[in-house]
Image 1: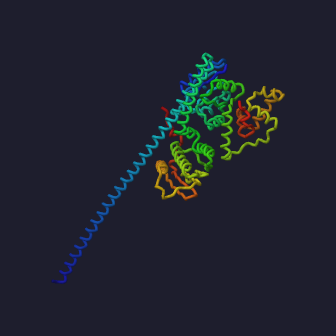
Image 2: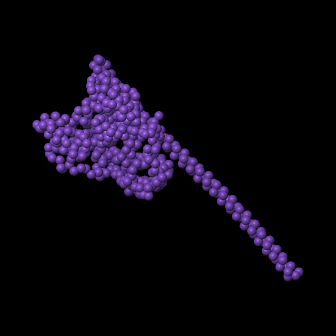
Image 3: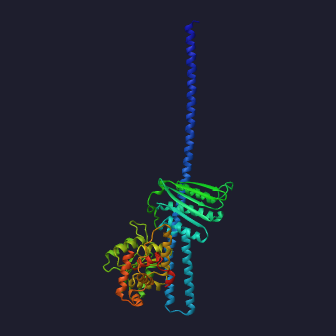
Length: 274
Length: 227
């Protein structure tokens, strides 16, 4: 065998090995790419699923709130007006002097029943949605809430600067979250004071809620229904929420809602009447 | 004859109210509207404008341009300053009452009020320029105490003379100029002079504004004016 032949074989082996290695590398690359695509697909599906769930939650809550608004308003304005007129007519009848004492007693009791019905319709309507929320806004309603709490011995202070009206459903969302937090404080915290701060930072709304109660322990059976409710309401508003608590020094909740949720005039979401 | 306008979207309530008003002598419903926009058009067309308007707050707002009772109050006050407005609403919350009086309404009644009070209120706004019952006065005062917290500065009231404060007090008791003159043994002309000074010093537009001013600045005590 000549040196030239040996060299040729050596070259052949070299080329063959390199070819083989290249093929292997190629196959490996193909496989990783395939796996990556698969993983991305799966992530995408997960994300879609998550989005879908959030959308579902959002439309669920929005439908519920819209219906509540409509129901509350119809009950308050329509049923309220009819009952009011009923009461007015009964008063007129009673004054007409055409009835015996016994008949007039019946008229008085009819009037009392009408008043009771009126009061119920007002109460139910207010419990569904405080009508002042739509007319005067969140801060105003929370100030009213503060004076109610004061009667119960809890001092609630509100701090806000340059915070104006936000879209109706956002306002309603924040209202529900704050009421849930206030209820928690009243029920479990044995607190003396609550402080709520509204602050616009880079047009995102930062809400901080603090109380000086006994806080909650992190070991407690993870999340109560109240906290879950708050979390889903914040998620629906595309916001974030974090809870911090220290045993005996109360708790603090920070909610951040993105700027885009704050846009649109609150008039755009007016609920049409039927 | 007092001409009355009824702006109310609930047909049953409007018809009922109209029937009650027509039983009273010296009053007549001359204008009826069920939406804010309709009210604006009818008011514009009316040759004889109503003297008093009974206005509902919860007017339908589903069609553009939407005008609710609050918007309409502002519109009527600026366009027809001689028309007196009495709000007749299902809302009995103090926030609504104080807000509407601040927007220039001359009186505020809750819908299920005794019809007799509606009649009194109509007479009061035509004769005295305003009708404020106890509930309304409390609402105005409480509406302010809330605002105090948000640091809205009050007008300085120290520059009112004691005579002016006395007159302001009687105005709040809803006495007419004649009644005040009689009580203080001065002429009606002098009373009106003092009242004009008060209007000028406080910067309000009418007698109802004076009462709001007095209540807001704690110059009077509602408890003394149980009507």
